[in-house]
Length: 265
Ligand SMILES: Nc1ncnc2c1ncn2[C@@H]1O[C@H](COP(=O)(O)OP(=O)(O)OP(=O)(O)O)[C@@H](O)[C@H]1O
Ligand SMILES: [Mg+2]
Image (cartoon, rainbow, N blue to C red; front, side, top):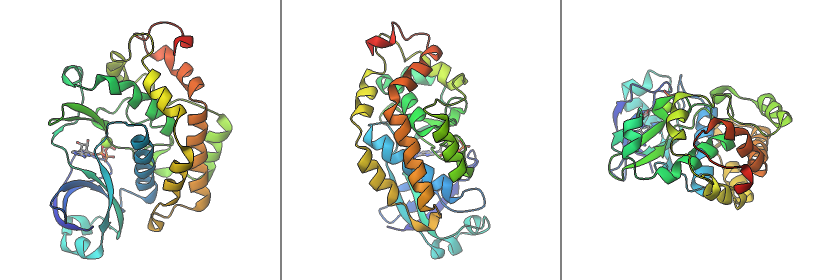
């Protein structure tokens, strides 16, 4: 499916996404190759979505769309950013609100999904949700909080390479460096009771890693990810998943409302 109309650029994103209409008449927030977005960022979004889907993390539906030269040439705002034809990441546009704060969080109807979002961040090593208030989204229609923006995973965001991934692997299972960020503090109120991570932990234990691997390998060529990088990124995910119990132990001190000992998990 391809894009038909460029609606507008989004002002508050550093990777300069746009809202565009596709052939199906729906609006999507699109991320594509340009001066502010590279193949690593697109790959990060793609990998995170595959894992998020498998773990039932609430996220806007994401698909790949044909971002072609005809569309680029028809839209000056896109053309001047040195945009290149590619499969773009298209996140179905949801009416709502970014900039999550405690009063919006109070209103959401899926508090039970919050521990899952936090543990998902540890699997993909997403250091961009604990501080940045723009990476959770309040979906007006469903009144749910959604996880958005996975351009900056594997700690190093848009700039990782095989060496960075090898370093992560040799460091062993880990948690995101910014666990003390303000947004995680807000979320911590919903990480409460005796076994807040029980549901997501079970899903992670049952995750079909081979299926994830197959999907990661199907990444579009034009994003320029080497087969070595694909393999190593999968190994990082695999390391985090296979050691999720020790990851959970490491994040526990950051959640004051989580009661009891780890053995209860
Ligand atoms: N599916 C969606 N529906 C509605 N709005 C969205 C959607 N996806 C993203 N947005 C909006 O676009 C903004 C930028 O998107 P996103 O956070 O993915 O991009 P970014 O450029 O990587 O942002 P950042 O500045 O956090 O690095 C979000 O803060 C949100 O307001
Ligand atoms: Mg963002």
